[in-house]
Length: 354
Image (cartoon, rainbow, N blue to C red; front, side):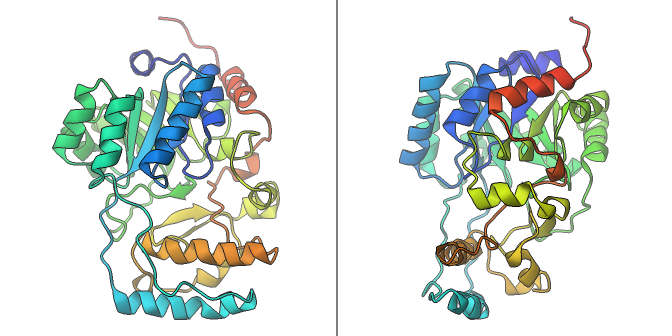
């Protein structure tokens, strides 16, 4: 554990998940200042926006921080499927006196082909870059490593972890089935063994020969201790930080997290086109019986999901948001991010130094 924390430049085995659209520069700075590793989710941001977020963070902290990028395969477009998807949801748009998009776009550029994002990261040199949905090519990995950047990658099984190690990744974020937000699976259409966080951490700690960071369902110091006892070097928490003061989650998201929906998270792909764990809401309920083959590829489906949420919010209906949350959601605590980080550390069992 100590070796990984030394490389990350942090005192606590606590990483704040880089939640695109939820984590903010203020949140990341606060976590880093409190001794953990704050992080920014850049997957949904363009290069200019990402650079602005990094600059804002650095105004409030000079400590190490991480950024995350999406490395999904560019979408396989299917005009018939996309048109059918628009028509399937047209009645819901009509409920809110709105029209669905005339056409759907691939709204996010994968880091796998984003040369401008790579150039920006090489210039800014954050302490850590993490990858979600897969791995970039060898040239991109080498460029980041040569710039002195530590590299992390999400893995949901042993094969993905071994692929990451072989590619030169420094540590694995072991994402259990409990985790909120998007599954980090390299291939969203491949069979998913749905390994829980503790089982996955133990398997990787024993068989992957690479430092492991536990992620999924971890909400307090006791859960961090459990992950460390099973061989993790640190834990990454996302849902725990959604309710913090610095979170970009809107009022409806926060209210849902504090209410009955927190007890009923569900894995869905109707919102974005990839499996993701969300608070149970109107969107997930309608989409529960829709077959995967009817859903456009990620992030094309997300274009419609965002439009539908905007139409619903305009009519004061909050049930169509991407309210990502893990199975530990009922344990969320509302407070400043720094206070939560210190509380998590205080809840952990003392460990011998050295």
